[in-house]
Image (cartoon, rainbow, N blue to C red):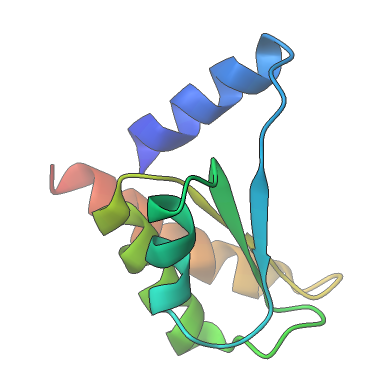
Length: 96
């Protein structure tokens, strides 16, 4: 995941236009399906969508397996959740 996020940052830095799949339905497999369909990245919406921690983590894994980045939109001010969501991504990148 770290490599995918680094590439994403480089693309944003170059001013590239990116197509983002915004997912509100709590189906983790959609993340990989969106990426396979040609989206550049996916956002798993925990703020206004129906994702919970467990489904968001499975969505991150689905995106990782598809070779693309996943971002998680957390509820405003939920800093503990932000930390919890970033830990699996760091762990996944260290397993490569």
